[in-house]
Image 1 (tube, rainbow, N blue to C red):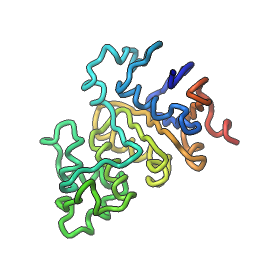
Image 2: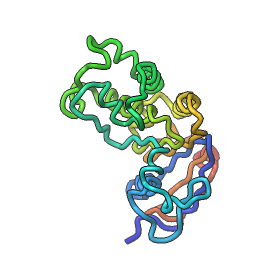
Image 3: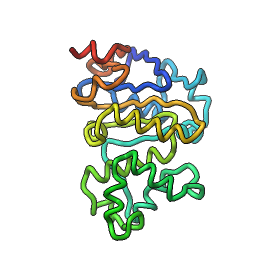
Image 4: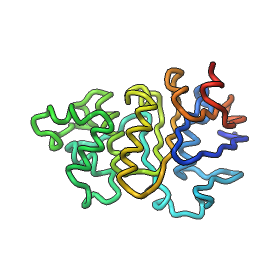
Length: 220
């Protein structure tokens, strides 16, 4: 049984996209395909005109930042968890850590902790609330300065201020490098955040018939 069929989407740099649809429509599957966790059985996915199957997975994923539906943190300090996602941890400065956390709206909280970035999070980040864990995961993704930022899950959207804020803050992070513009793709978005995206590709039942449309017009 195919998870997706008839999907034809062109994502432009510097824009945000929200894949929307019912549960099981294939939103998370699209994000997994973009990262090459799965290979398409037909058709192709290209980045800058190059089929991603011709790229090393490490090269492809180095250009991406990903936040999953469930925040994934490990036992250790905030600093360690953030650096775990960096492309080159040895080059990350304290300023870089603080800037990423500021963009993820978690820096003020970190500064209130007695040990700051050296605070131990406990098993799976259990000493933090769900929202705090989610924001740290967003900061970790931004620390990579990704060309493509992938957010999967409703919590990613509702807990990080708004999608307009997402793009503004993400652009600031990417702007500190010369890696180029970035599209943000989100799965399982909610109605309140849809209109903030430039484009909203809707997915029908079982991932059928995805095409681009204007988000605001589509949902009025």
